[in-house]
Amino acid sequence: MDDVGAVIPLPGGGKGNGRFRAVVVTMVPEAASLGDDQWRAAEAIVARALASRSPAVRRQVGLFLRVLDGLSLLRHRRRLAALPPNERTRLLESLSRSRLLLIRRGVWGLRTLAFMGYYARLEAARSIGYRASAAGWEARPTEARS
Image (tube, rainbow, N blue to C red; front, side, top):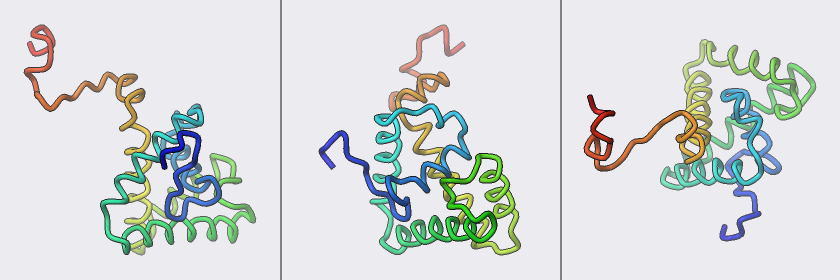
């Protein structure tokens, strides 16, 4: 993990985290412009979040990503990462409306991880003007508080 150039493998992320990246780009289209270092930062954020979860939860995330890949193969004859963005969007949107609560929860869980990985990066926080501080409002300039 100390090797800056190494990909941090995520559960079910696929080769080079291709499945995970496909989900992130689908849910946060701006992520398509991320460079390798930015992807590694996003994946490290998600890896740290998953590391604090139980092994069962990590297995569930990995299994759900593999299930998405399998559904993509069945429906479109292409793996998730190889699907055009509009078809990936349609697939994930249809699953987010599934009658099965477990499937809906899986999609929303991946959405949460995608948003966390993208928006928790310092560059993304700066680009949207997010300036939260542990010091609370006292850390903000006086004119910004009024």
